Image 1 (cartoon, rainbow, N blue to C red):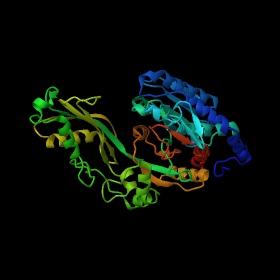
Image 2: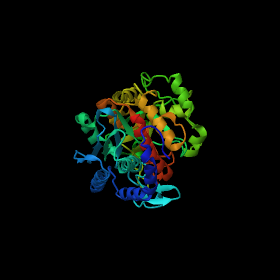
Image 3: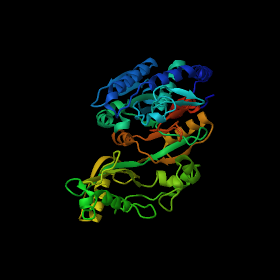
Length: 466
């Protein structure tokens, strides 16, 4: 049973009853939404993406949100809705999410079809179940429950839900700076992260930034016969591997000059908070299947994942890679590389920094260029802001356990736009689990988290009001 500030005692039992009786219907509705294959990165799914936006807009209207609009953009629609009847006497909560999903490949590894939601035990399996339809639906259901029972919300609420998060959020990034008055709020809530376990909530107070780009090594002007030219022309595949190997030293530290210049050391309070996270090498190896841990010396696994910058080689190709064999020296070789960045590192400077270093160490037998694809800086929310403490109380009320605080290794580029355009703190309250298979086959959502997440969403609104 929910309890705490902001509740209406006469209606509390009615709310509890509503949450119980609405479960089956809410699950059915979420499954209806999950059946829409809203894959934003594949052009053939453009009508499905628009259909998912329309479904959400109709649902938001049905639960009592106002000013609902499917905003046209250069990409997928942005769905907006609000409830603002508390006026200036109460804070305004901006809830962000996304309704687009990742591609499903490899399809053959799915136990059940990705767009036919299937419940097995306590888990709901479908693409988008956790990332992010299930998590944004948590807050739709929380608002619905309060409006259906109390007829009002404890705070003003605005929803902004995009359909391009899995493809760069370009439309939302362009829209948000032009709509600061419409989106003005006191705090932004993002539920696109995870908990440590079903009984251990986690508040993410920092996200690493990102830089991603392509490295190209050019050698001869065309592909060459390896029998005629092998041993006399530097193979770009080999040269690329040699260069990539020099991006780290034997301890895992990035060797690019000036890469660490703006990295701030962790303070004692943060190291203490991160040390409380019940996650270490044993759990890392269990989740990853790696034979041993690896990384920068002097830092715990939790610190390496969330609070230290990285440089990863994500893909390599060049020459002939089809069936059969072709004895060729390729004209070019390529690699996709990404960096996760920490606060104060300038994301726009990383690409030129890597390019300068590679050109400096490259032999005269090849040419090297680096092309930036995307970049966004890291963000950190101070642990002592009142909204963070309100989120901690809400988690404790719904899940019966105090949350731990950690930084997240991943990146949500739109969070930077929220901070820059709106100047408000961000709460990262996730309800997924580490084994939810995000972006992989058999994505799932743990249903007890879903139902308690709705309670946490209600509790958060009440705690913010108090």
